Image (cartoon, rainbow, N blue to C red):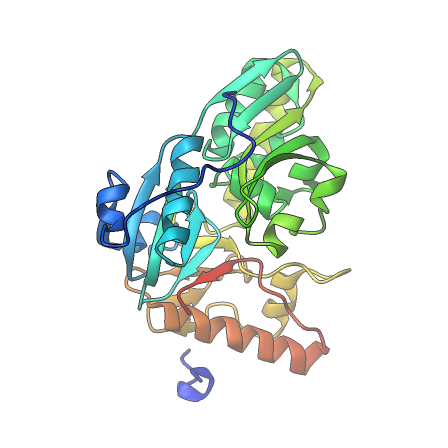
Length: 319
């Protein structure tokens, strides 16, 4: 049902970044090898929505991440760092700056600890842990995204989160150029939150995790159970950004939206999932404004019916 337009309104790095001496007549395209112009961002997000980035760069190492950020700052370009685009809604207008897609993905195991680059995928980290008979991240089975994104948003499921297994996080401070290891305590983790989400000048380069030894079969059984739950309860097979809203304390965001009668609500090419109301899915040709409309509608109805303010879990770019 369309309710009309009413709501449309392990590698060592230097401790500091080197000073760049670049002629002002030179362009970022000459300085950053491999950079591209006017690249549509939709294919790089799980929503499959989004317009072009003025500049787009794939960073396959920590050094490349740092260099790309240096260049953006040198040329006074706004920049945005992301991995798999699994928790992101990009405007159809795109982003008038530099988008840095991190693909630094080294993973190194030592005893019961694993160090993973920010661009490593969560399923890669899970596979290494499982094959090493290390338990603690089974809950991530079926969750798209990267290690860096998971740390930044303190991803989690089934009552567990990434902060439970964090030992340290290697971070670049864009303002000072320093690279620092943050302890779990210094990360200021909260529910789907961290210091990195609140301070956009802190860029995650890698994370070190600790695990518990466990029987491989038991680990596999946990993974199987979590995947089964997802298939049964979530709209697998559709383009989405996962849970749109954080769960208010003591409540399920999906249940609240469902009780407002919004399951199956359609706007343009977007729909509130009939399987799980905290998922908005792209039916194939959704626009960012379609998704925004449904987000605003859900927030409005839940506020009016339950006096509860829903807070978005997903992030926005280009709006």
